Amino acid sequence: AVDMSGTNVFPHFDRITLSGTAPNATEIVLPKGPLLFSVRPITNAGRIASSGSDDGALSDNYLTIAADTTLQVQVSLRTDRTPVMYVASGTASTVVEVVLERPA
Figure 1 (spheres, rainbow, N blue to C red):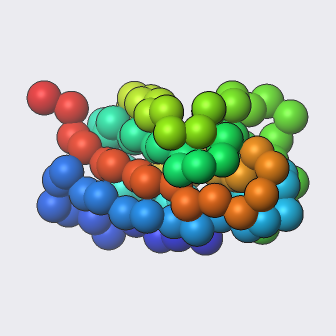
Figure 2 (cartoon, rainbow, N blue to C red):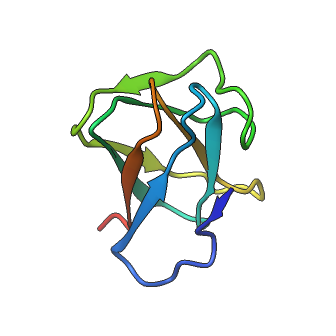
């Protein structure tokens, strides 16, 4: 898992190398509160879901992100639940760029 829950300076930028075993997911633990979560897979397509397990299979309910394309999701969980997103490579190991922002 990649723990970004302690992030308190925004925007926050990160690069994560995903498993080459598709569709194994990497869990990204997000800070609580309203958040804009952007993800961009480099070179290879990626997948994103709001459920899954770290280093396990990605949920069947995922969205495919074309290579070198940015997807932005507004996360607005205001419960005691820890907000997480799951990302996975579509075919082979790839790097994803992640941006966390607080909405205005």
